[in-house]
Length: 213
Image (cartoon, rainbow, N blue to C red):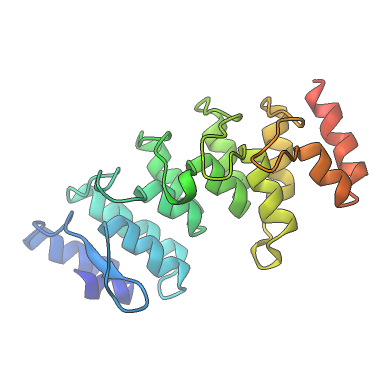
């Protein structure tokens, strides 16, 4: 099964699972030394992130795996659910597919972040917009950094230059959904103060306008 995923061979994977789907929830190994076990759905996201498999083939393989019996929420004893993996690894189409399946949106993974935290940090505005339709908590700060999703979006925008995507629009979406600009993180910094220190007063003014409705 792993070989078909590594090749991005959707039809080969489908044919294989039609013959034998007993491995569909068995962990596959990834990481620098190939010693890190992850659910097959997470493994597909890893291959997409590594640019071994393209986004469309990744989504198609996730659909094949789910139709063959892969559990959309992955293994309960593993840190990241497939949705969290998709959000962290910029697999937007896979994330949207999993959300539509009704997966757990409150699960916490790496650093205690939820799907909304990770999609915000990565700047996946489409995923954030979809998550907000499910009334996820925009003020959730129960993570390692005691940061709200708005803090995570600002960190991804201002501190991770290789990570720039749609974080600016994410901040707009979050504020329009009720995210507070004055909530403080573990370092006692608010989103307002972070924007001011970055010299983004014009954008802060726009966010303030949206916050007022």
